[in-house]
Length: 183
Image 1 (cartoon, one colour):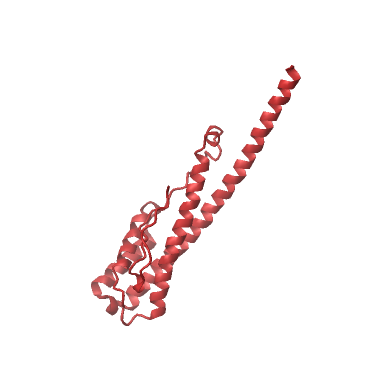
Image 2 (cartoon, rainbow, N blue to C red):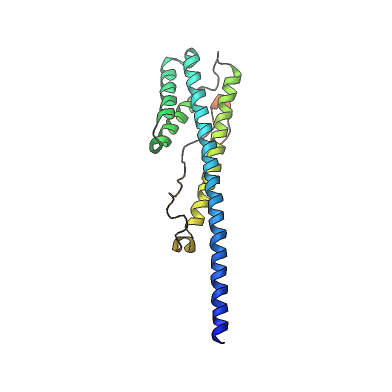
């Protein structure tokens, strides 16, 4: 093989590496946007759940009992006002309070109970979609060539959002167990 053939082979390898790098960068960008959209949806559902729990505690303390109403209100306020690094613990506390509610809440409108149960389901789904996007992003960024080429190295690695989002006992439903989102 002559020098010219080696040069063409080297050019082909460089072009293939360049095409792969561009394709990977585009894919990483898409995954990053997917993580952002999923995080926004998750945050929306978490805020909605905390708002509904606060409304339940504020508007219907007689149906809950004074101690449970105070605990639920405190957990809802904690979930809304917590720093991002403490968010999972605050959401777990709110989830625990919601799971401890009795299945029947006399005096509480059925639409509020149904909305609270539906929001619990939407939180679980939003968390699953978010964690799936994080898993895919981490998997691509941890492959050998993206690490060697330091693709997206300046951007923070997304973190999983791990909360106990079991859905049993929310407004009398019985629907599920904790999900394992990570392989």
